[in-house]
Image (cartoon, rainbow, N blue to C red; front, side):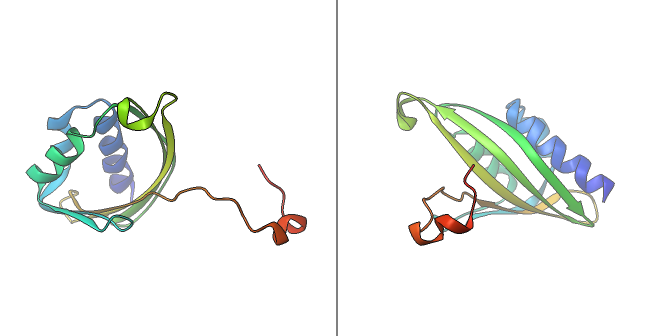
Length: 131
């Protein structure tokens, strides 16, 4: 589990630093990346590194939480992006990412979930505290 945590921390650190060689070194050759909301899938290390490194705009991320258990991990990140695609004030998003690692300690599968915030139903207002 400690190795899983270390690998996932290195994944986000190398991504944030745009150190694509270090990033690629953490991935299995046949890594599978999926985003359920858009139903996009990227197969293979080279294709995934190309996909991530080409993300538009100026972006930064912060890992808010990381949970690792055996060969799996999950992270909650805050992702901030600016540039033409994201409007004059930019955009802040929450990302939840699930990781699977093989016995060699390489990432074999990544699933990114990008939940959108929404307003809760008005008839629940008396049951909750908003933050």
